[in-house]
View 1 (cartoon, one colour):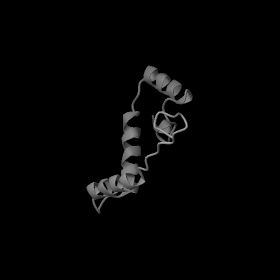
View 2 (cartoon, helix red, strand yellow; view 1 turned 120 degrees about the vertical axis):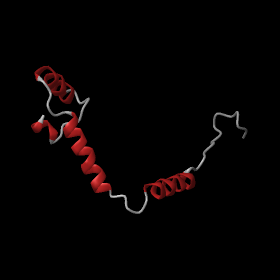
View 3 (cartoon, rainbow, N blue to C red; view 1 turned 45 degrees about the vertical axis):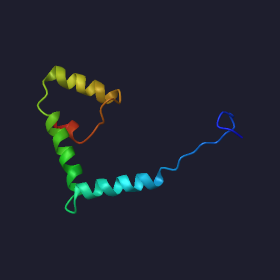
Length: 79
């Protein structure tokens, strides 16, 4: 069987590299990283981003949420 043969199975296992990448990401985040706090911060930022919309902006925002372009969330009630 040769590499030119369509039945040739060429696979590369990247799982060791992926584990190394994840190790480096976690090291870069540091020991004080709090994923729950990061998520809360993202939710607060999203709520702020979509707050205070005028009527036309709100209409467009609602259309984008209905179309699935933007996720619906708790900030929808405040916006």
